[in-house]
Length: 338
Image: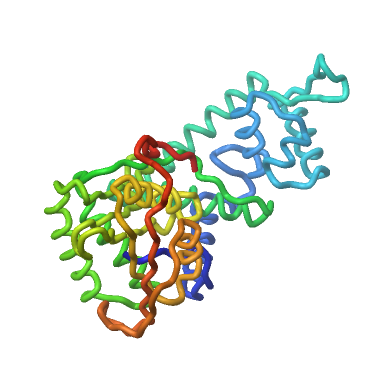
């Protein structure tokens, strides 16, 4: 169906909401206090113990990179933690200039108390949320933390876990696909109830025709949740023409390669089925999605004003001719690492 924007101007209300939520997180997690996590240690020291405990050992230089703190600040903090008996500094056998830091017995005890405090804090908060909201919090925080790191370091953010592409119907996929479309296009272009009902009706009809070998649906799964979909309808545009429909990726996981993986599955299927061409409809302004389509062999064939989704947009039809390569023996993609 339509594509997704992977880079766009961020609305002011998003910025204000995220800033407000970030301030509340800082306050509720206790970062405004001089100590953190039920200890008598400042936040930077608590994070130092967490980082060293997770790695087993870190040098001061490595710790500086992990915590994004100046070397001078790290040096003062490490000295205080050593004096307090929380850390010990040793000399590497391979290089005498390298002095890894590790936890002492007291440091391990402090770390266990920090983890227990944090675990109770998280569990207490999550008990106020539904299972679906918990997943939203989990994935949203991970994505935002990765985006902040990418902004600071200049490196592209990476998904903390892989995602899986599967074909065929699975329970809940129709509702989830409608939800992702309604949420995204409601915010992006103001589509409302009419648009959502049209998507739902079209999907319901298509699902009843999935038994036809010329039709297929793919879902992207991340931590077991549906986070992206695309379909090929091999019937509704006539013989020899495939219709790419319901292409969407969840807001929180755009830019991780999921869209590319879904499109690769869809166009590969079209080539193996021997369709003369594949078409899709989108609209003007979704530039990142257009680049994605063009990268998979689609080109703009037609554009015109239209109101079929409830608001007037410049509708665009893209066409991709069937590849001449013999893909009959190629195995479909099953796992893509984010």
